[in-house]
Structure formats: structure tokens, C-alpha cells
Image (cartoon, rainbow, N blue to C red; front, top):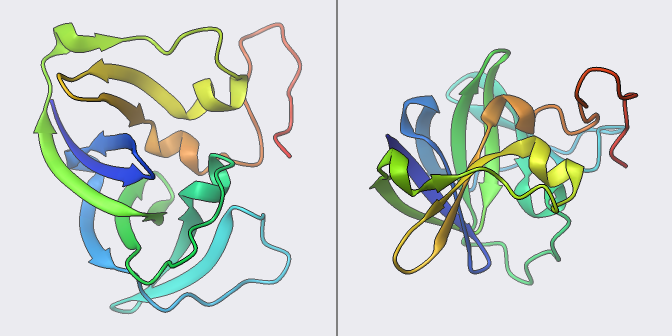
Length: 152
């Protein structure tokens, strides 16, 4: 499989390349009152209104001091398009299935909810995001039998 990769700090993340529409420099973002704190706002992408998720906020990372070089990764989800605000774009990586491992169960439920799997690369670990779950930032689905937990 091929993945479009990006960095948040030194951490490498990716989404399946077939789910990425395009990568663009940061667009002007219009803030939305009462939006969830991980939603930075809306962008106008050639006439399409697209929500922008601040990946640093979603992953509870400190904000960048200078966001002028931030990149947006436009990703397709069931509800349309979503823009992921990231620090820096990486390469398109082709990763063989035998290098993937499940997300360790010792990590928090919120993290395991959005990370589909982890790929061992020679120089880094690549954390593969599940784009559909990225837009579920206001709730965490638990296995059957567990109650619904909200991510605050």
C-alpha cells in the first residue's frame, strides 16, 4: 500500500494515498464559533467549504510557534472532504504488509481510535491514521459491551 506521509514535530504519520485529494499550503482559515476545539475552522477550496482539523490539537501536542509553513492535507471521508493541518509534508511511501503491527493496547483509547496500525521503517515508525475516525474527534467508539466515552 502507498501512504501520503506528514510530520507533526518529529513524528511521522500517514494516510492511504487513495484517500488524499491533494496537498496545499495553508489556506486562510475562517474560525467557527462553538466548534469543537480541534476544528481550526473552515477553508474555501475552489468553491468547496472544507473543515480544517488541527492535528496538533487532536493529538494534544503543543502548538507551533510559527505556523506560517504549515501544510493542509485534503482527505476524502464519507461526509466529503476534510483538511488536516500538519507541520510538514513527507513523501509518498510504499510499505509492505509484513512491516505493519497493530497499535499497542497500552496506548490510550483516544490514540488507538484514530491510529489504524503502525509500520516499522528503517529510520522511523509510521503511524497510519484512519481518516474516517479523525472526524469522530468528539467521541470514541468502544467495543460492544462498553459504554460510550467522550473525548474532552
